[in-house]
Length: 135
Image 1 (tube, one colour):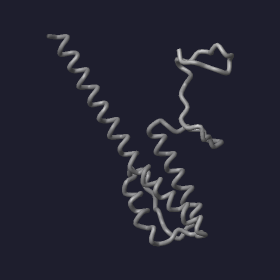
Image 2 (image 1 turned 60 degrees about the vertical axis):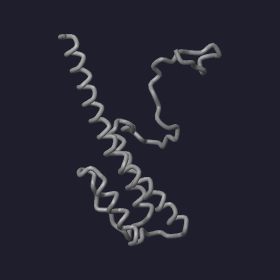
Image 3 (image 1 turned 120 degrees about the vertical axis):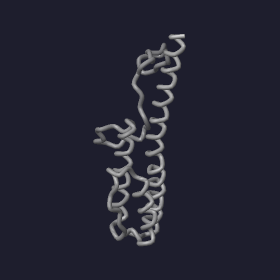
């Protein structure tokens, strides 16, 4: 009976940990989606020849701010340059991703290759050093 109790305790602990992780990810997903939507709107405005954030975008800015964790909330305002606001949105997305442990701390250069994983479980393939296969 003691072994059963130990296993049940471990399972309960794993469930609690998973719920915490899922909750933390949900707290990041919603603001990330709102920031993505905002960037799309800003890009459309920029392509239409606008240079400043229009006042009618304020409700969207408020929704983004309300969805952010309190310590990341900023004073989002209209009337500033579209490029400036887009840069702020990208910077905020980086900070949100860092909270999940996804974003690199050092982004001296942009990298469009997507997430990179460590080379665990990879061994050189028969075609040479540049080709690898999963171990």
